[in-house]
Image (cartoon, rainbow, N blue to C red; front, side):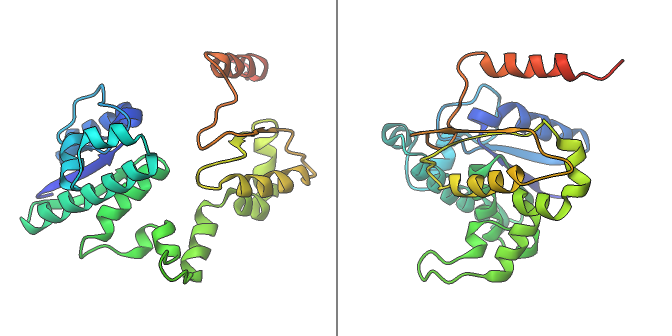
Length: 240
């Protein structure tokens, strides 16, 4: 493969995973540029392109990102920077591919860079940018259907509960803030409604809600999550 593969990752939170991916690609002879798009802090892992360079390409600075402390602004700026870097590399004939690593932010940033390139095909990825036009409100119903079939857990579980249910009894523990920044609590309510209606088998899990919790609201403090997971493994470990 000639040219670079850009790996866009929020390395302040996904640094270990991004490094693992980059090193695996390099071991297979792929020329990789690991690009930090993190909006919170400098990473603890080495990167090829710093977040300062990404935000500079977007027309802003790390200082402004840190001062505003606005996740939406940071993600939008990182996406613009990713687009600028990918386009410039493509125009030099040096770009072989793009990978976006992470959750909602990583998807938004990586997909923005992909969509800016002439060989991007919408069938490779689906996100909110595909599904609706924020200026006109027009909905692409086919893109929404594809997203539902691929990523909507409630829909997937409803369609396949007879197969998935027996493997998931007692294993589903879902927590969300009731004031999620991206309004994700609505989907969780519907997910819970379906799971509570399950029979043969009943899902036997739990849902927890933070009354004023935003995106990423945690119901645990300190090491409580690890302790809960350890207890679960101790009581449910298989023989051997």
